[in-house]
Length: 359
Image (cartoon, rainbow, N blue to C red):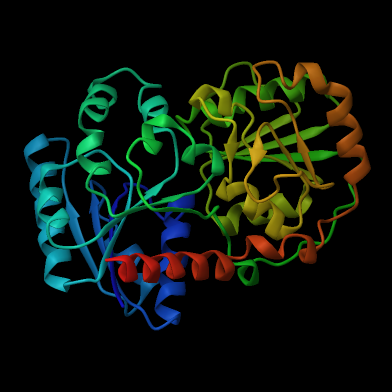
């Protein structure tokens, strides 16, 4: 089987999506699938992708802020995909581009759906929201199949109306790549949050509010620039963007990790974020503000707060109890074996084969 991955992505190896795509491609290649990556980006990171993917073919199609260069880059990427003559094109959902029309007529296109795009793309004002709203049907109508990362997304009318074959595969992680960190011996609890600038559903403001409720605890915020935060209390250290080698020692010092706390801002109630899987792979118990696809009935090492605006303030006692209970402990690897990437990608490859059989 030949799979061409078509991806529009502008961030580098620190981002969760970069890690996910690299791991997926490596896993498919290990299953004797011929894989190629075709990247549309405004940041020239070809050497970074090639360093991680080694012998796997990568074509890079840069653009700048000019719309003409962006359209040209997509057209070139599509031509590069067609030259590979794949059995399947795998594409992480993005804005519709006219060049994709020529792919629909030739190859089955499978879309990976990671979010409610109608809600998320409109969190910021601008043309992106309305362009997506008026053109998304051109992409979804022609897709051969859909891969959803949560159960919730499959039930949204904006996807269900297209009646496409689909599978639900939550995000996974290569557990073998992460050491189980020994628990720290802190005098007072220490918590850590990994996030990204410009993602309001991450709820970094709620982490700040949590820190104000527990002034004796210590909090580390990684991935957010300090100038983006208001009134940072004395017990919060803001580290800015860091790569894994730089933030792993901070995780080793933490008793508990904090995941997404404001998913309601994106109009969703369920997620399977990569950072939560990374926390668990290191052995850290986690506080989140939503349902997790891989733990539908919860877990002792996950504190699931309500998905509401006041979920921190209204659950101070629960947060304190959870943190104190898990101090000096780590999550057993046997309790999270089902989030391993090998299981996830075997399911994805089985869906690919099923789609080819249907055609």
